[in-house]
Length: 258
Image 1: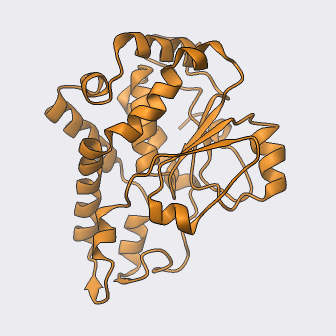
Image 2: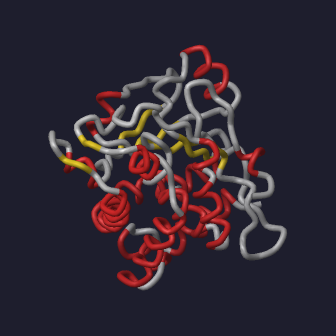
């Protein structure tokens, strides 16, 4: 993708931090503002001095919206002075339901579980997605140029990827571009090197490990198709399930488009 390097944000302790800005929406020459909203893998390994010099002083982050599960939050805690850490827990993938000895995960089962996980979150995690959108659409955020946010999960790929897709769609970024942004995770994210470093109770081979730690365009494309089939459209989902009225969407666009 043209310009992907400019969207990457190099921060020690992360590998998948990116600026969601810079994309052109449907109307030519109107872009998503850069430097306001960032997406990432978990920042729990960011050293304190880097958090202060980069996250606070350079990126001016004021809020992190953490979509990690309660288990992940416990395992990967962090606290950065000057940044409000907002917990919006979304459970891990359905793969976690297989966390008991003796289970062998095949490639086909892994892909099926990921597709099902996306659909489940669309139906069950409306409040978490809505809180991020409501913050971005709030009049206070639109009027105050001093607030900057980062949203993340563990790898910054699935939960974070769908959250980014919602935001970019509401900013009228074309679907093809949204899918390209989603796929950048495979270029940037550095997954664990050991096959069972995270899914430690599940038997799996290298192919399954790679499936779980990478994204595939079909996951997000199928998720967006599911939203359209079940809720009518992504816009209808945002309005009726997430509670984002037209005025809020307009406020979001005023703040995040240029």
